[in-house]
Image (cartoon, rainbow, N blue to C red; front, side):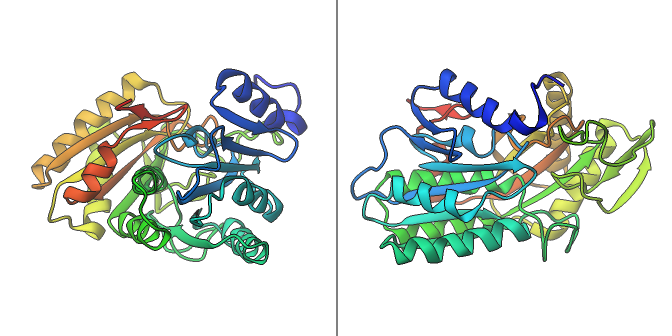
Length: 328
């Protein structure tokens, strides 16, 4: 591993992020990453966060057109309420703050506590929980579906609505609509290794894969002998469409889990596009790359979001963050 010590890996990464991206204000000690121009008077602020190890989620999505601040926790561990309260106070421009929360028990509980504390300090807070993963209903980390790739769609589209000056209730409604219109399914080709453990967190023998894996290495639906890219695309798309059943165009995220090269991801995207087209789904936009990762896990996920003209316009709106940028 390319680290100094497991105990300093998050702080070291934040120091490196600060050096690489002067448009961000990075508080390494308190672990809060903020847009340098925050707070923006009269603008709804978006705050998200979660365990480290899923980069560029969330800190890599801080900037104009997306998040106002992010709170990175320890690896695969929720940030604490104090981080969230500091972030909310730093970015509140008087129009309120939207917390975007992935559906993991620690994240949900800590963001709920932070919302109460922030309200006590005079910051108006609304929360949206992302729960897009169709693989399992309950897991090691959640009650209900896990929050995965749709988090990117929620943060981007709601962030654009906030940048346009929409009020808090409207921004939250857009975020919930995106979540309700999104579904994801992930596949592991290899196990994840955390810095603290230094070895794979679960046993996945050579020649096997795990269908429906979570972004922390949680078990999925089933384990099978290795499949081709075409077979994985068909299985993943069917899992998503069995639940979503889109009747309008969609945005597609073909996401790498951290150790899958773009050569393979683009090849997989070709199969995903074939599978969607063959099932009568019209693809309006596609994003391919490592965006919601799991450290060094080999694998991929597919996220599909049904969109109307408004959501597609907000998706296309300018964004300028370390990991996502266009239109500026």
